[in-house]
Amino acid sequence: DSGVTQTPKHLITATGQRVTLRCSPRSGDLSVYWYQQSLDQGLQFLIQYYNGEERAKGNILERFSAQQFPDLHSELNLSSLELGDSALYFCASSVERSGIRETQYFGPGTRLLVL
Amino acid sequence: AQKITQTQPGMFVQEKEAVTLDCTYDTSDPSYGLFWYKQPSSGEMIFLIYQGSYDQQNATEGRYSLNFQKARKSANLVISASQLGDSAMYFCAMREVMDTGRRALTFGSGTRLQVQP
Image (tube, rainbow over the protein chains, first blue to last red):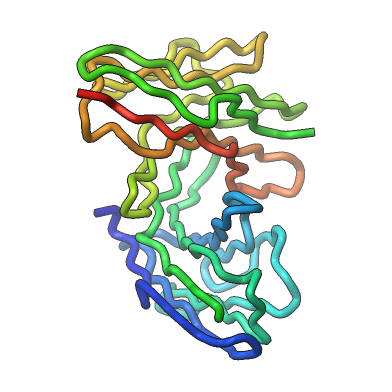
């Protein structure tokens, strides 16, 4: 158990809908990262938050947005869903004090299926 | 250009034998970190081992070791004494700091390892 929690574990929805994925980082970790794992694109970085502020953006679509709350949990909002958004969405957290040595610990993921 | 290349889509190994999973990387950043993660069929991503670009020695963590060859830009994972529970996807990942300070990981496409009894 990495200490990172994600809910829900599975999500089935229809095209055009909107969903919210939730992540709670490990105790003490200030940084949250969102990644998408799909069969055709592999594992891709979406967005990073650090202590409530957006830190970096990756290949995140405009239909997707995220935020990190004062208690450091984060939510990833996916709207106008398309079939191609079906994927495993991971949240990872790290302390991010300094340097490159810091390890990101991943949550169990949310498996999204868009029908 | 691919930042992280894992050329072995699938590997088989006999139980109790050692296996090497290949990873090559591409970066112009002098300071970077290399990570290996394991993803069993249940889906979670499990951190295995880390190697920093300035580390003088190859990293080891239990049965996992990293064969780091900086000049060749390779960071191969060696699993000794394979166990049935080692059957999983293995991902190599890199973090570059760069000017932006971005610390997100870039992942390779993975290698599926199957350990045979």
